[in-house]
Image (tube, rainbow, N blue to C red):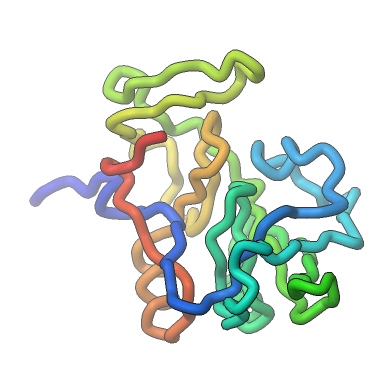
Length: 197
């Protein structure tokens, strides 16, 4: 029997381009943004006034999805998707409130940042081509042929951040399928082995 690998177990959370969908631009009022990108828990210092501005280059795109791509390397999700994920009792997962602003700066919807503090050192450094970030030696800014070590990720884990990578949140393929089956919008999945940055 073939042994299961990380590519069999997990996929990477990404976003789907959908016509006329709202386009977030900048995340406001987040102090020490690096905490979000490095999986640091914010439970004891939860931001209370986060806002996402709307991209002025897309003034007519106002369709609200369950998750949106953005240049801030975060995962905004709808209240409906948050409720669904809460039923899964996922360890070390925080939901940080964020208001989505319209093009006039008014709140049009309340969303949440999906923030996994399950930080796992799982990169197979023998098989992955890596370059250390000059500005933060704990992180990598160039990655090719990403390979993760299966034995580093316990079987109970459903969502985790890969230590050393700013924008890689992995989700079990079983949970990803449930999200698809529930019809949540704006989300796509990327195979681990195809990731590069």
